[in-house]
Amino acid sequence: MTVAGGSSYGGRLARATVLNPVGQAAIAAWIAANIAVLVLANGFLPFDRPALAGLPFAAQMAAPSIGLIEIFALMGVVWWMTRRRTVPDMAARAPQRRIAARETALVLTWAMLGQAGGWILGPALGYRPFSFHIAGTLVGCSTLASPGEVWTWMTYNFVVFAVIPYLWFRRRYSSEQLNLRSAARFSDLTLIVVIAAIEGALQLAVFPGIFKLTPHQLMLAAPLSFLVFFLGTVLPTMILIYAIILPRYLKLTGSVTATVILGGLTYALMHLVEGWSIFATPRDTALSLIFVFLTYLGPGMFKSFVTLRTGNAWVHALGYHAMAPHVIADAPMIARVFAIG
Image (tube, rainbow, N blue to C red; front, side):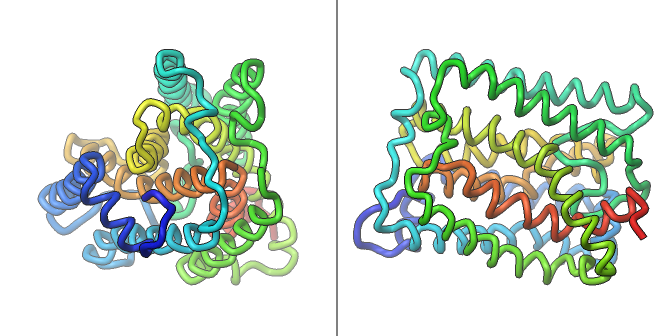
């Protein structure tokens, strides 16, 4: 997945993935995960996903792999648009390896403790366990979240996963070292617009519910959806993983491929308990955890790739997260949650 020279993106991608031990392990894990789901599911996925419930089992199984192909194609667009740019030395933005390893371990520990806190806090307040998404995000849910649940989830995630890590690391590192400053503003803005346009069109095809909103509903629900998800998941994702952890992964591994995959795995790790997950039996638990990996590895890898190419975590946050999917797909849910008529 590296980046300079004269050969095609497809050839680079194949060599960087297939010839890299981490890439080989990821391919093997992807195949094994799909086989495990086929064996465990026995033709039925038990998840609480009303938006996908009507799809045949084969279509639900194929969706993550089809999505991964689209993600690799979008990576190709990013590579082509940035092919003449000087790719920033992100490893140089991280401290020396010993400190980078310690900081990575501490941040990952904090992230898991924060998730565990959300799993406890949500039910303690009469809500569902909190994750990086509020229940009903993207795929719907059988029981709609209440406004109180949405505001509490948003505030908890924003404080625990964005504000506290940012304040701690900003005391020690500059905005550039945290991938929060653009070195090529016009190029980054162009990339944001292109990514958002492509992904937005795909999201509109997959999630057409926004077209069913009245103009009044859209005027209120779209900005509210942007606010809720920007604070509740976009900024926490950007700060925790792509501002802080990603440069340290590159410093520790020395491999762009390994860093992209580790970024994807970390993104999936932050969604362990989704609103659609079912933990009633060991089988349901295994299926839920495997599908978290299948669902979020690819998007997390893309966020890693575009951040490594640009050195700017805002590009993925604005181009690939805030609007598509969380306004396009989730504005209808927000309209229902807040009874916007």
